[in-house]
Amino acid sequence: MLNFEYALPTRILFGRGMENRVGEEIRKQNGSKVLLHYGGESAVKSGLLDRVCRCLEASGLSYVLAGGVQPNPRLSKVEEGIRLAKEEKVDFILAVGGGSVIDSAKGIGYGIANEGDVWDFYSRKRIPEACAPVGVILTIAASGSETSDGSVVTNDRNKLKRDVGSDYARPQFAILNPELTFSLPEYQTSCGTTDILMHAMERYFTTVHNVELVDGFLESLMKTVMHNFRIVLEKPGDYDARAELMLAGSFCHNGLLTCGRKGDWASHALEHELGGMYDVAHGAGLAAVWGSWARYVYQTDVMRFAQFAVNVMGCVMDYAHPEKTALEGIAALERFLASTGMPISVRELGYKLTDNDIFSLADNCTDHGTKMIGAFRRLDYKDVTNIYKMAAE
Ligand code: NZQ
Ligand code: ZN
Image (cartoon, rainbow, N blue to C red):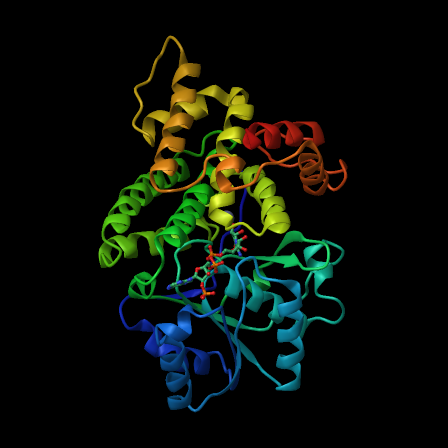
């Protein structure tokens, strides 16, 4: 097990009606003027935005509305939010929505609290030294951004989707009411749940040994997610199943399940280029590349893939041929994803990649061949090209 530090500063308010406590939570954080950040239309249509406004007013908070965040949030929107927040002298940012809105809110928080170009943090030119306080009312179980240190933004000018992580950006509070996710379209439920599974897998496939306790947490989380995923596809309004997914999404990505180990994150790096270039939904992009990544790297540690196959996917261990079990586990996960409507190749995602497309993706993913990705197996430009080629078929 590796050395680690773990602290979760985000206060979680979980359950029915908890969004009605948003005003008092912002007051506890000494907020007085709120930037109310939200997405396209779902929070308006459901009446949630209106209820949040009334709640802020009842707590004596003033606010300014800043809606219109798109999935794969854009840098231009973050910059617009920074300008507005400065003009209006905002001292608290409330994100009402999913990962895209939360990540955009964190970007605005960085922009208010630091001088200079906010993209510098995403392009790794500079490290943020502060972030304005952010609170969250979550409407989709997916990214885990409600408790994570991450923010992922797409630069509209060069189509690069990049992330920055810092503890400054962890939200002050996350309000998680599973009922707020009942209105999700099936495709978004599937994308979000796939992302949760992938966050578990990025951590599970590690080369660090003696991490049994967290292995067990991750296996349990993956099984719970798959079980409840099936239930919500049948019954979108099943509170208990939605609650399991919401809790899993946050617990999976708040740092607890990284304790003592090193995650891989190659599938995320591969997806971010697809998201930047083609604006695909994050979870669907992950599903489209994961199987190709897994088949490319599984020989690095066949027994870990066999453990996944047996303990998570319910395959029977073939002791004489563990490699067979490892491959069965990969195929079983792909069958599961396909059964929930997720693409398991880039072609199924709707894109026919040419050789040039693949070279551009690999070029961006490895910073023109200067950077390697992944930790389970380190992957260079050639490896990344090979994986995109496999995923394209
Ligand atoms: O814009 P609206 O109209 O609200 O619609 C959204 C959007 O179209 C809709 N939606 C959300 N809640 C809804 C709803 N529709 C009906 N009812 C509801 N209750 O869902 C669509 C997707 O929303 P989005 O916020 O994009 O989804 P998600 O939470 O999956 O976030 C994806 C973003 O998070 C990043 C991804 O890269 C992607 O940009 N990630 C952020 C991470 C982090 N900060 O730690 C980690 C992740 O790995 C991920 O990379
Ligand atoms: Zn993700």
